Every structure is written in C-alpha cells, then in structure tokens.
Length: 297
Ligand code: G3P
Ligand code: CA
Image (cartoon, rainbow, N blue to C red; front, top):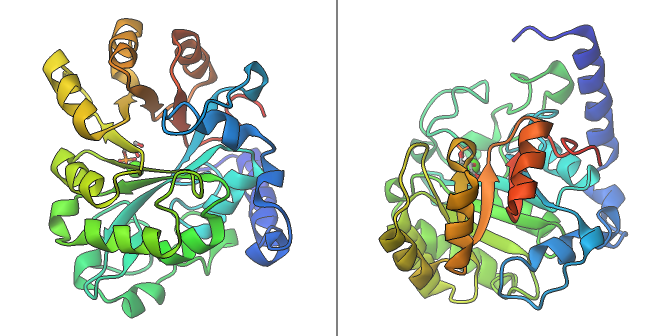
C-alpha cells in the first residue's frame, strides 16, 4: 500500500506510543483512568447494567480490530492504542487453533496479516506464535504476534469494553464452550465485572453462547444487504441484546424499528466523520470504526 509521508510519520508516532504504552507501564494504573467514565457510561446502553449514561458521556466508540487504522489489526499494539485513544470498546475476531487455543485473527488463514501461510485451524498455537503479525502493516510493528484470547482478557478484561466476534464458529466445533470457560474462569461472564459483548453473524452459535453464558450481552451481526424483518427481530430478542448493522443498512427507520423492539444498535464499519455524526443524530448506540479518533477525541 502506498502511504504519504505524513501518514508514515503518523504511523511511526503511534507505533512509538504503542511501544511506550506497554501493559507493564499501564499495570499500576486504574484501567479506567485512560478513558475516564466513558466506558461505564456508554456500556449502559446494553440494558443489562443500570443506566449510568450522561449527556457528557458522548457516543460509544468501538475500535474495529483495535485501532486498526494506526496499527496492525487484531494485535496487542492495536488494542493498546485503542485504549490510549479513548475508545469505549475494542472489537476483535476470535478463531481457534488446531490445538484448541482461541486467538485474535480475522481471516480464516494467516496469509494476509502475517509472514506465514495456512489456515488457523490447521496450525498449532506454537506455530502461530512464531509468526510476525506486524511487519505487513509497517516495519515499525515488526515483532507483533497474534494474541491469544487469554492474553487479551488478562490485559483488558474488566477495563475497556471488549466486543468478541466469533468468526465462522461452525469451523471450530466447541469454540463457544472454550470461550465460556475463559470468561467464567476470570469472572468476566458477569456484566458487573467485565464489559464484554459477544457478536457473530452465526445466530446458532449465539444461541449456544446465551445458554452457556446467560448474563453475557449478545449482538447479532447483520450482513450487508441482509433484510432484517420484524420476525427476525422477534427471534433475536430471545437470545440477543443488540443488533450490529453494516453502515449501508443503517437508515433511520431501520434503527428506530430495531430499538423499538428493545435491542441496541451499533453500526459497522464507519470511516467518515460525516457518516458517524449522521448516525449519532439517528440515535445509534455506537459505531465501530478503524479510527477511534474519528470524532476528534
Ligand atoms: O463488527 C463488525 C465487523 O467486525 C464485522 O466485519 O469482517 O470486520 O469482522 P469484519
Ligand atoms: Ca470483526
């Protein structure tokens, strides 16, 4: 990808910030200190917690695959930057390795985002950890690894919110149980402990999650051009709390119709400030974006 000089300088600056802002550096601090009350305030839109939202809280911003405009997607560097930039949530994609470890990875294979090749489900966690997941994005991020979900939960669970997307869960039988185990071991299955939403395009998988983790907020991801009928919404209400719409489908009447069924609405994946502000005027509960600084905070 061709980058302008100013973009390169920005990348190096954020890379430096990501390196400086290590978990160790953050370890002694209150995790909420970096995003003040915004996490708690925005989280309350997902009906399972008392409403602490205030007009000053501002819109809910979820960093899509981390702050993926500035750092390689689904890496700890991108997640730390999202936190530093004041996002309310980090969105990440969850898949499983051949030996059953859960990892943050968007694609079915490691080909696009690492220096390796192969399907995640056919590689062991050890093989995956040897891959470089940052150099493809910028030399400044060489050495980044594909994170395990444990690592993400241990670093961010209980602080900034997390939106965990089960990606193609039918390709990883038992992934819902593995996820439930990781969350319950850490007490993160209780909304008052961890601000975590589970999302997927696969409603069968989400139903299984609801059975395993009855207190966990769940969001149904809607595909581009997918029509959401009233019957769909009535079904979603049985196991979900929110609908996450693609930007092109997020028209005001659709948003209102979903919210009137008692479901929250977040919209993905928003790149432009004008579109973001229009959606906020429509009353969406939040937006997912590669750029947590989209609205200038
Ligand atoms: O949060 C919605 C979005 O993450 C779904 O698309 O392909 O970026 O995982 P994708
Ligand atoms: Ca995703």
